[in-house]
Amino acid sequence: MHKSSRAARAAALGLALALIVAALAATTSGAAKSRHHDSHHGSSNHHGISVSSEPFGSFNGQAVERWTLSNGKVTAKILTYGGIIQELWAPDRKGRKANVTLGFKDLAGYNSDAYIKSNPYFGAIIGRYGNRIGPVGGQVGAPPGFVLDGNTYTLDANNGVASLHGGFTGFDKLMWDATQIPPSNGTVGLKLTLHSPEGPGQPGSGCDPTKNPCTGYPGTVDVTVTFTLDNRNNLRFDYAATTDKLTVLNLTNHSYWNLAGEGSGTINDHLLQLNAPAFTPVDKNLIPTGVIKPVANTPFDFTRFHTIGERLRGNDEQLQFGRGYDHNWVLAAPTHPGLNLAARLFEPTSGRLLTILTQEPGIQFYSGNFLDGTLYGTSDRQYRQGDGLALETQHFPDSPNHPNFPSTELDPGQTYDTTTVYAFSADGKGHGHSRAHSSGKH
Image 1 (cartoon, rainbow, N blue to C red):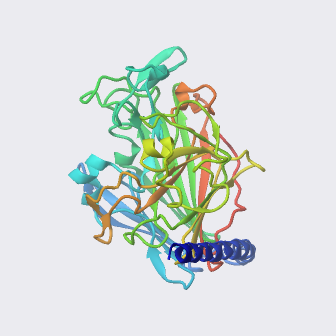
Image 2: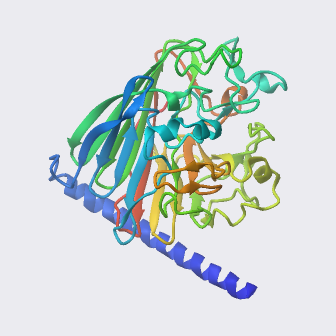
Image 3: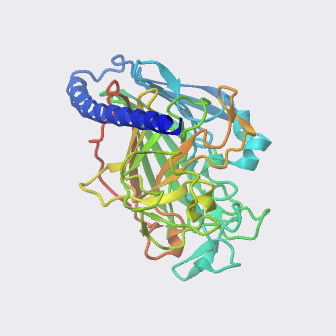
C-alpha cells in the first residue's frame, strides 16, 4: 500500500512537471503573439481591458473605494484602504475563473478583532519596512530599531522583540489616494499615493507612542505604488518613493495565493520553484542571524520544483522556528538589466501557474503557518494553517542591522524605484511572460 501510494505520487509529480514545461513554452510563444496584436489595438474597447471603481465601506470617516482592473481574463480588485488586493480572478486550463487570493468580502473583515489579533496582512502594501527589524545593533534587550548616520531610531515592538511590516500602523492600515490609468495599448492601471510624515504617532511612521516608547523612522516619505494589468496577464507593481531625510525603506505586497481557489484548502500540493541559491537563517524570534547560507542539501532548496508539503514537517531547526517556511531567500544574481525570475508557483489540478519577476534581491516565502482557523474569508470558508502562501519580493529583513546585507538606505534627492511583476498563465492558455523589463533601482 505504501509503495503504491509513493508510486502514484511520483507519477502525479512527473505529470505536473511535464505540464509546467508545456506551460512555460506556450507562455513565451503567447507573449510574442500578444505583443504583435497589441501594436494594432490601443483602444479601451478592445480585449476587454477596463478600469472601474465602487464604494467599499468607510474607514475612520473616509470612504473606501474598490478599484477593478480587468483584461477579460484576469481581474484584480484593489482597495484604497491598505492598497489591498482584495480579489484576483484568473482562469484555469479550461478557462474557468477563480479567485486565487485570500481576503474578505467586506471591509469589516479587515478590521475585525480576530483579524487585528492575528494580523495576516492579506493582500496589503507593506511599509515603511517589509518584514522584521530586530533589536538595535542585534543587542539582546534593546528595542527594535537601528543606527543610521550616528543616530539611533527605535520602532514599534509589534511582533515580540521585533518590529514587523512597519509597526502597529503600517501602510497596510492607511488610506491611499487613487488615480486611474485609463486603458491604453492593452494595459490599464491604478496609481496609489501616500504621504507619511516623520514623528511618533504619525501615520506610517513606525511608532505608536501609546503602545511603546519609540522614535519611529527618520524622514517624511511620499510613496507611489502603480498597479498595471496588461492583456498578457501580467500584473505589474511599480514602487516609487522620496524622502526629506536619510531613511530606510523596503516596500512589498503581502498577497496570499492559493491557485486552486480561495478557501479550497491547503497549498501543500502546490509546486514551487525559487531562483535562489541561498537563504538567510533566522533565530527563534524569526530575525535573521546575518548569515547567508546555501540552500543545497537543506529543505530550503527550491532551485527545482518541489511540492510545498514535501519537507514542511521535517526535523529542521529553521522550520521549527517558523512553524514551517517563513524565511527570506537570496535570489540569484541578475542575468540582465531589469526584471529577473524570482519564483514559479504551479497548481497541478487547475493548471494555474504564477511566475514572479522582480528587481529585488530577495523573496520571502511564507507558507501560511499562523493561519489558525479564526478567520473566514471571501467565500465564508475557514482559513486554516497552510491555506494560502505569500511570496513577497523584498530587500532582506533586518538589513539596517546587518552591513553585509544589501542596503535599504534612501537619501534625499534619490528616488526609491523598484518593480515586481506577477504573471498568470494556465498550461499555456494565458499569456503571462518573463520578458518584461524596467530600468532603475534604488
